[in-house]
Length: 137
DNA sequence: GCCAACGTTGGC
DNA sequence: GCCAACGTTGGC
Image (tube, rainbow, N blue to C red; front, side, top):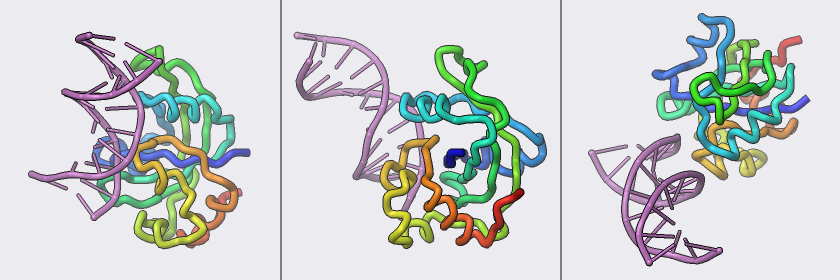
């Protein structure tokens, strides 16, 4: 079981869109490091859903429902599918994350432009706790 | 293969 | 809207 964080601009595709649709194809990633992370995602892995630009906060939890396959928008790249699991009771803002000593190595902080990144179990548990959210069964 | 120019992301 | 960070492109 691995943990991840993905970023999306909510005016393009946000958490509400994922909840409405019940599933999504995570495509359009055009960065090799992010692509490698998509490649390494396994069925059932848990994904923190982060709103970039607007909101700048972690808003929900999703689960990988299909492992990587050719991106339908450009088959040279990869996509995965994910389904929503739970909204955060309280969104966790980037400001709060940056204020946490234990999250200083989070790639969201260290490498701001990466859009798909791994998260350690410790980081994951802390962010969940900050969001006053329980991990769904 | 180096590196300057350029484009994009995303926080501020 | 600005601009820092950084990935990509292309000339040499």
